[in-house]
Image 1 (cartoon, helix red, strand yellow):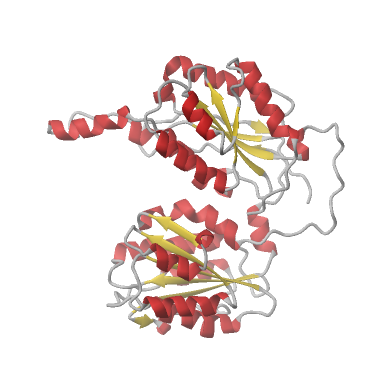
Image 2: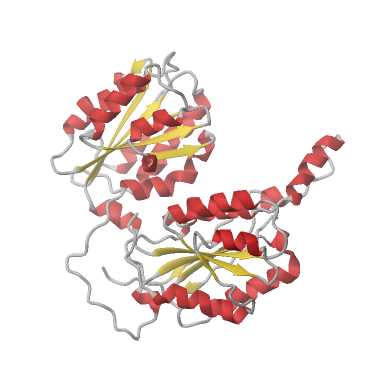
Length: 425
């Protein structure tokens, strides 16, 4: 695939409060695009179906959010009879066959999105997930083109009326297609979601329907099929920078509020010195450094009692680093944030001073490592060595010396020492 032009590294943290902006760093460089997700989704035929819970537990507002999510999600694909075809089934008390969108029904994106946006909420008195999966398999996917990949996504916020039937129907469906399950709220049975998808990797969670957008990128990666090059590329010359030979999307993650000004200046100098090197010239770089709406103060009329004021002030008493690590792992490398399919995912985490939430940091670091992110841990000079020792199980410590330039050198050596095979998903 041809190299493409300029890409701007994503600015991850978006403020929803006027005048509130988190520190973020973006670098512009001539970055090679390996496989653009939009092209991947448009070039490979796909039969993609959604099963939407329209039972009474959803409420109209939440059903609308799920419906809008699907309409927005399909915008990533090139819709057409020879390209990607979309089906949608809604259910509650049985399957609402009068509302079904069949795979062959819409051949262009505009009419498809219009149809999805008009799906009604039936407020069914049951959650017949098993019947919906059965209908998808026997009726909708019966129209699937031979030798074309088939994928079904089930979105629900409740447990099915007959969980055994749901598990049996999902197992039958998985013999013919891939199935992913999306659970909304903590009321959904994790075991049922796993039985629907067939494994943990096929399960997605959000706390509420308004957060479905947060999983859009990860779900897209699961449903898109990379297009193999028509001929294997020639190996690059050995004297090329590793950013071309083995491209990476690199995030620097730090919490300025917890670090304080002096340590934060150390971090920003580390980043500036790193990105100036030849090694980083063709890498894509971003920073995750805060979540401004949550860190903001409050105006004069926001609270009228001391308990609420104390509750708000507790926000400033804990490190945001666990949440920032989660943000990097969960959505930082999504294509809408600039992530490239086929590019390595790299995270550099900075530690300094006393840490109050080691357990949450370790938990989210483990999640990041499980998702295939290469992790490096920098010590600003007074980092918690006990925590860093535990973190070394999931990545590379850079603090064999506390000197900044040496840690930068260790990071770049690790980044470029051993080219790794691209991780397509």
